[in-house]
Length: 442
Image (cartoon, rainbow, N blue to C red):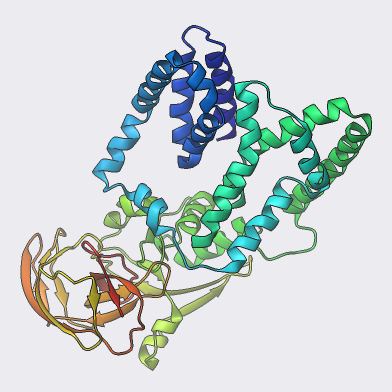
C-alpha cells in the first residue's frame, strides 16, 4: 500500500506536469494500488478532492484522467472476475460483514493507536507545522489533505466496528512532508526532530529485540509459535487437524509443522480463504482431530470425548478425535421460505427444503451424528441453532425434499438477524449451506 501510494504520487506529479504517457503510468500505479488494499481508492479520491480547482483550470487533463482509470480497471479485471465468480465475497465482507456494534472503545482505541503509530514525540509539532506549511503544487495539496482525511474517515468507520491502525498509514506521507518542510526552516524544530527520531529508533530496536527473544517470558500470540504448533502436531500424530474458523491459526500450523490442516468456516465468525479451499475433501474417510468448544458438550458421555491441550503460548486447544471423517460443508440447501422484513416471536412458518448431496456417501440426518438446523444470529454474535425437519437420508450425489415447520422462539431478543440453514456433523462448526436471509424481530 505504501509503495504503490508513493508510486502514484510520483506519477501524479508527472501527470500534473503534463509529461507524455504520465496517464499510462499513473493508471498502472492506481491498478496496483487497488490490488494492494481496497481503501487504496481513498488515495486517489482524496488527491482529486484536494485538486478540484486545478482540474477546473485544466479541463483537458480530465480526459487523460479517464484514460488512467481505464488502465487501472484493466489491471484489476482478473480480480473483479474472481469476485464475480465468488459472489463478491470480500467486497460484501468489507461493506457489511465486518460491521459490529457501536463501542466507544473502538473510537478511543483507534485514536490512541494513531498517537502511537505517528509518534507522540511529534504530536506538538503536527498542528504547528500543518498551519504554517503552505501547499503549492497538486502533489503537495494531496499529501497535506491525507492526514486529516484518512484519520477522520477511519474515525467515522470506528463507529461501526474495530479499525486496524495501519489502515490509516497513508497519512504518513503528509505528516512526513509537513514536518520535513517545516523543520528545514526552523533550526530549533530541526534539532528536536532529530533528537526525537533517535529516541524513536531506539524504542523500535528495543521492541524488535523483545519480539525476537521474549526475555520476560510473555505468553502471547507472536511468541512460542513453533513449540506450540509442534505440540498440536505431536497429538495429531499425522492426522489432519481441523480448526474452528481460525484462518490464521490453521495457516500458522501448516507453516510451522508442514502438516495437513483446514479451517472450518463458522457462521459466528468471518469467512476466509479456507472457504474456497477443498483440503477437507482430501480428509474423507481418514482419522482427524477437530477443535471444538467444550461449552457445547453438556452431557457426561459427550464431555468425556473432549480432550484438552495447553499450548506453550498460553492458548488452550480443546479437541475430539474422529475416525472416518465425512464432511457436509458442501451440501446445498435451497429453501422456498421467504421471510418478511419483520417477524414476531411465536410466529409459525411452513416451508420446504431441497437438500443436495455432492459427496460419494449417504448423509443420514438423525439428530445424533448429523444435524439439520436453522441458524439465527447477527454479525459477530454467537448464533442460535434450532433443529428442524425430520430424520432423512440424503443419498450420495442425490437430493431430497424435506417439509419443515418452525416457530420463532420466544427467547430471541428484538434485533436484526441473519437466518439460514445448516447441515453439519455434531462435532463440526458450520457455515450456512445456502443463502441466508435478513429479518428483524421487533
